[in-house]
Length: 222
Image (tube, rainbow, N blue to C red; front, side):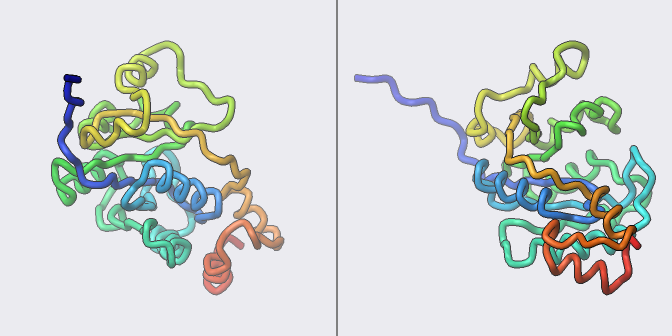
């Protein structure tokens, strides 16, 4: 008689959180978000605009405006939502604070994934209480073709210690793992869009029309 398969506690469907300035949100953000929802079978992915980024100057476009654009961008796709919690807190928008809040709302057994771009991972050791992030969530790294993990140093050791062999393993515990997903590259940047708009050129087809209409209505980035 064959040995029984190992059993693991059943977790609720995974919830993801994708932070950034979204200044403004565009199809690069949105396509990556949707691909992650489908690949990781996320119940929901929350796009969370940073109100006051700790490692850069605050965007000239207000957090409220940026969140409104995210709301418009995800309208009609129920698996993507805007999470504006960082606008409710004073001071710098530290990711660890948002993860602690989310964990309190979702409960201890809900699988929670924080999505990071590969560029952000390179600087993660400068983040506030960065070594506690995995106590509250998994980390999903969006990799670009040709990108490699750091091979030496404290960050490399941390990544190696927590990297999972497959995304399926994210469902075996609520937090603590790291996976890498290589997604379709879309060469669109918020900086490029702001430059186009400031020079009077069109940003059409780089973002949802509803977002572009909002930018034009409120005379943003010009």
